[in-house]
Length: 385
Image (cartoon, rainbow, N blue to C red; front, side, top):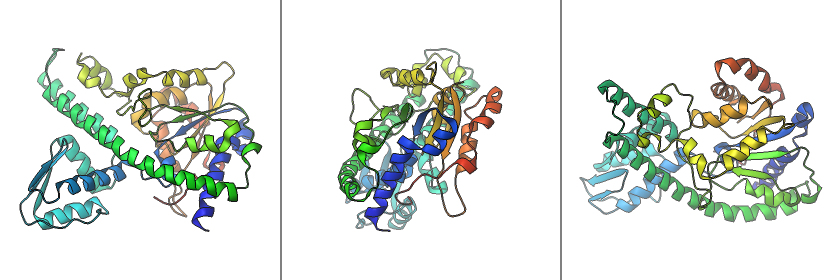
């Protein structure tokens, strides 16, 4: 299949999922709440994972350090102890970067233990969740205070200030990276529009939306907006729950959101606002997006099916996902799973992640709400990332 034909197929498939999805709609006959996560961007060929970001950041840092004996920013510092070497346009992996730096006698060091652990986790496991790592670092600082039996609420804590400064810089660099991808995406989107006019079998004006659709987009990118331009007369209701790039009216929310963690209440009781600076609940107050989601799920006649497209359902969004999944109006949860190979997929991993968002008293409901694997389908993929 040609690349152009493949693009048209994925675009058509997502249009059908987002608007028609007849099998599951007929099965449950209700409204739909879509949870769009990073896997949705990856399925469209965008390199938006934290792994991609870290590789880009390290390559960018090394380019800026080229032919310098010393270079640093808020996260890293590098010292040249040997001769200068020509850098490739881009290293293809973090492993290659550290191997070459070792060969060349360059010393690269993280300025903060938090970022050092992120790099080490990426090197060892080829995967990292920056928001989750942030919360683990926060807990470490809290537990240190607990051991010291510090009970005053107004203590000055250089560790939490350093952690938050480091985290803020990572957020800024991540936004820079995604803006770079957005520019590339705009070019690709125009190509997709041209391809669709010629190759799709679905006409823009012949699609009818059945029931209410609310799309909760957890990404900072605007990939989902492609479908509004394609469906025109059937505009999708999209809430960018974590903000959007370059939008001062809907700023990016980057942090952690597990208020069900047993340590969270203890952290609140420290009476030190620095510990709460990057908790997502406080970021939600910047707009009315969270309230819009709640209004949708609490509608008197608004029974709905949750449909998960590329969202990891990790703990960093636990408070919101618990509210959605355990709500009595939520009658079903359908997983569009990632097909890793002919024999492997992440359906059961997703069910395990989803289970963490149900309290013990709600586990029975969880088992009746999750749509069985036999009635689930894989996410369409532009290409394997």
